[in-house]
Length: 205
Ligand SMILES: N[C@@H](CCC(=O)N[C@@H](CS)C(=O)NCC(=O)O)C(=O)O
Image 1 (cartoon, rainbow, N blue to C red):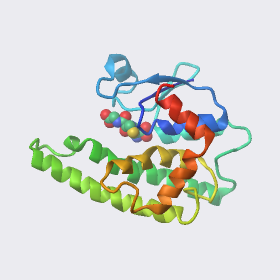
Image 2 (image 1 turned 180 degrees about the vertical axis):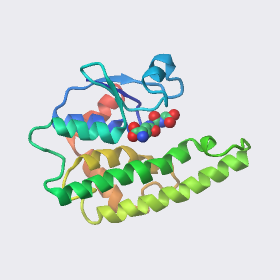
Image 3 (image 1 turned 45 degrees about the vertical axis):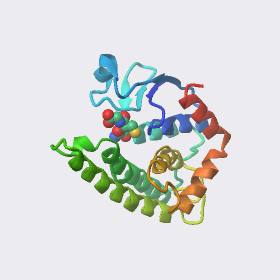
């Protein structure tokens, strides 16, 4: 399978999950500023990740890609055991997709969220996005608590998904300072050799 990805984005998550599950993935780098006609033909939104399956089909949506990779694993690694664990994993995936990622999407591309194009209007959208980022980050901080994981107190696919996006908090003034639990989670992830290898692969190494 091939994964279309861009360094520094949420497309790191499937790279990590593929490493954890020993799934072979060819990586194709995409320039998000200039994705080109071919990439736009496979994903009209011009966003990453996109998975090219072995049968030639293209699939978007990071959360679906992560769950597909886990479904390929016969040992049931990284997922829930029983309906209550599934419920918790699903709701934290939904939080990351529906609450956490969108807060940053506005911060990264404020011009998409106003019809004004003056500096003041753009700055106002960005400030509102920053408030929202802190609100969702606080929820994730409390969820991690005194563990080193996002959910169930053990490694799941949600850790990879969160890791790819929590690193964006470093772009804000103060970075992870207000979030010691998230910092512990990030450090734990960074100590994982598979995560280290994923970061090297993401950066083109
Ligand atoms: N809902 C999509 C969101 C994908 C997305 O927005 N990816 C970002 C990178 S984290 C992107 O490619 N942004 C470029 C853009 O929106 O132009 C998914 O889950 O895959």
